[in-house]
Image (cartoon, rainbow over all chains, first blue to last red; front, top):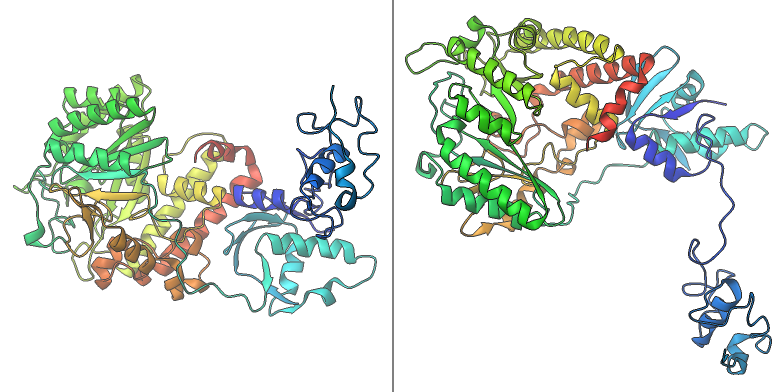
Length: 106
Length: 473
């Protein structure tokens, strides 16, 4: 294995943006992606979870459902973790069933 | 896809090579195996075929990817763009140089301001002294055209700058008031021949943390050969006690380093002797050497042979610098210090300097020029205090001087730091500021090599030395 060590500021920036292993001296192992939509790019706006557009936010309630389902965002939707675990049960496919989702009155 | 070894420069270290990639300005250490990979792509070869599909292919791919990311391997058809790509304009100013006077109390024989190489036209020559009003207008120009910058700097220049000390003092107070009001910081610098450094001036300069550069050419005989009063009498004996007083006061006030700015001519070739005089006998913190700006054929102009003598002197000073760096000691040789800082930052210049970009100059009459060397030249005017910056002319100049237009530079490894060299030098030599300074290419390449070799030698022995460059911008 050849050894390539970035030395000056520019080379270190390149190595940092390069991410994966950079010669044996600077093996920057890829890390597990963190959970939650505030720290990773959550599909649903630009592309859906499959990378396509068929499940995009049409109707717009798809957004609410996505927030409820994949991350805890109590300001916008009932939280599925503690208070309203069954809130979205009536909504199997948001594009068809979005109107089944009801409000929650705490 | 076919890849080839990209342009780079190497300096050999103890355990491998220090490689400076021309396109990215990245510097990496490569062990002999990695160097071998780099060399295997000389002349170009198919990358996928080279990596192969066997067990070792993963490691080969890692080496390949790292070298390609650093800009050491590139697609065979890669070529530098031939059209300028300027940053968003108007570019915010960082520094304004005020020519507070075009008068001088010395008559240095090599001076481009007064000698045969003056580019200012006689009819564009403004008043001898800049008025306080023009200086305040310049401060406003700087503050109004530096959006997004918290720190700005004003540099005072001449003629002999201190001939207009009253205006400098007033301008500094005005700039500090304005900076305080806007929650910003302004710093000051000045170049002087030291003849007018009175106690009052010294107190003022240290109180306001001026960066001071003093034009001095070395020991008495060398200095007085060109830097003389109109009578022909040399200025060395007069300035030495004043310089000592300034350096002493500045040390006591823990001020910014005081620099000596040495003009090298055909008559001053012993740079190590000059350096040692300025540092050991006078106490300068830094010493920078600049070859005299001159059209060919002048008596003081550097000949080809003189340039190589100068490089040998630089090489001796570099040895001293490297030894000091390994021992964690400061060395005053600022030409090398500057190159090492730029190498370590990975500076990659599309323009040789900040002239017209983050820096502009203002003449005594309030005309705005590309830099202090271009004010009052008429042809290179880019506005005035009354009309503001002429953004069209500024942009046209920056496009003409962009590295993409200097095609001969596209095959040169020194390009990231040189970028064609000084506009004013090119103007004097070729009557065109946007030309690359072809007369000094060989020398610049040799000096950049010296810089890279010094970088490698220090990295080998004391990499911690470079931490000092991490903090500076």
